[in-house]
Image (tube, rainbow, N blue to C red; front, side):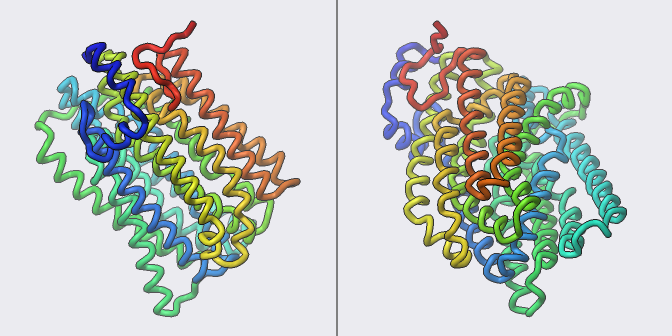
Length: 461
């Protein structure tokens, strides 16, 4: 347990001091700070690679084919995020819990059984999608059919990688968790597409989807091999035990959370693709992904602190948890503020890289920036709720935010186009941030906002 003096001292640190400690990896949470820095570094590199690859794809394929690819890959992200059934997020909580309590039999059972279950569910979803596509193929535009077929082949390995990401984050093995999906996969996609371009293959959505299949499978297999080696070396052997009922009971609300998060991230693009043209979808996607680069900060901090939230919650160390939550908010907000400022200054030149017509998306960046900034001010509050047994409450918050986003998209896009989509998504992010802050405050007695200065229990009166 942390002493009152230590806790109060932590509370008096300035935001700059907290960020300096993060960069140097010192203080009581040095391991977590280094994990956050590693996750942050990987996501920065990933953001750069993804941005270069998306610019290259837009230039090579042209706006129309790029718009089709954006639509298809957005569905891969949605289905690939749902296919693990919430187990990926459950693993982030269960792995440190089992490790802390030395329940190695259940730990080994989770590591094997959880991944097998994810592979089975994702394969069934992919097969169902292929069957539906075969039955309804004549009702789907010919431009979409082959890219969708190829994209469905990605699902099992995409879902497996997502579950292995959860295992790595649960153990705080950030390199294994993040390098394959966020560095190796986009690099492979770029390399395969560059090879196809040099070979003068057709630069169409189907070619990009085929490249995505190769990249996804190779990256997932590499991650599997690295994870297995680390498990063999670092985890005490034990006879496997399985608690499927408990795992699935915990994962169901987390599945709802994942679905709502995916809706927040992709509903605007999917609805635009349905209502507007591939050109408009491509412009919106480029603008949203440009300003959305700031979200890697929220993800990086959340990835690094998740296992620590779970550990402190298991111990019941409320004072240390409040101090750590406050630091987490600073690690999230201030880098996000700086990143948003830089991206807005460079916004039009960055959009021009996709093509001259893409600069029309700058207003989209301005509107979305407000939502990202408000969410960052609350730190990784959603991750805190998931890791301390409040996943049902977190699911309720995400349902409200996702429903807000979808409803506003259908309401605003037909009249206001891309501006309507950006407004809907930004307002949904703001709703999510406010509800997360209020829920943590009233349910846990913690204040997660970046403006909170006192440590210890948050006063509810």
